[in-house]
Length: 178
Image (cartoon, rainbow, N blue to C red; front, top):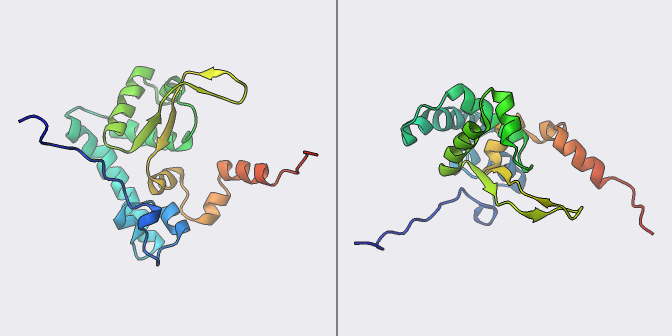
């Protein structure tokens, strides 16, 4: 009978569910997947996250959807998505870098959205210059996966990351308002 099934999206552990023994920084670096978050040390967390990416994203995606997704392209796509995380989505640019078409890139990203690894935020927002932008933004949904794909394994590595450097410069800019 129709209407007897309800689907709920289960998220990884979030800040409100953290045990007191786990700091926010640890949660932020490792993400919310319990095997990574509760790992005994950073190396174990890194190994679990790397294995997850390799097995789930590169191998299991093709099994789940019954299509042949090239693991080399998927791994490179995930790495590129991590580096454009939070930016306006440009499938053409990513496609040129991967040597595939923009529709193929969008098709791959739809699979990644289907398994809740990536999220595209809806289009049509107004930026500070009062211009209408018609492209969504794209995000890796788990901070642990994002950091692993970006090569950020600890706070010191994050401090050397280009995005962090830009943030620090903006936050330390002199106050010019009168």
